[in-house]
Image (cartoon, rainbow, N blue to C red; front, top):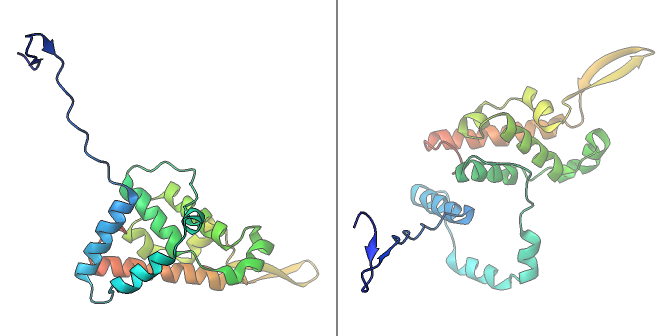
Length: 192
């Protein structure tokens, strides 16, 4: 019948569309990559009893508070989105620099890290190579964190000194480089 189905009455019907495959969500991909990591790693173990005990303490309001903030980005695929979200989360530190960050760049720690991750996503692919090759000199451009400041030592004479935010910039580089090294050692292209 040239691709048309027939009913009992003999009248042709349009072919029924095949059920769509369920699209993998970010959580599905995280579960798969976590299980893959656990199979490959002697470094990480999950205590199922402790996990169940913790899950029992969660309330709906806690989960709503934990919902991720949407980012104004378009991702080419789920893998790209997961790499971005993982980077945001591994760089979710620096609250001890909150006052200095507000003083120098008018943003707090989380917003600074998110800003840098957005800039990284827009300008390049977030993967093991990016993480492994990130340098201190890249931090001002991506995150807006100054690594050097000009300090007046005589009237109208300045010298360049390390910024009080340089230690934070160095920590960002160290975390990214170490993560990239681990990925390379395990032959992973990225987080996903």
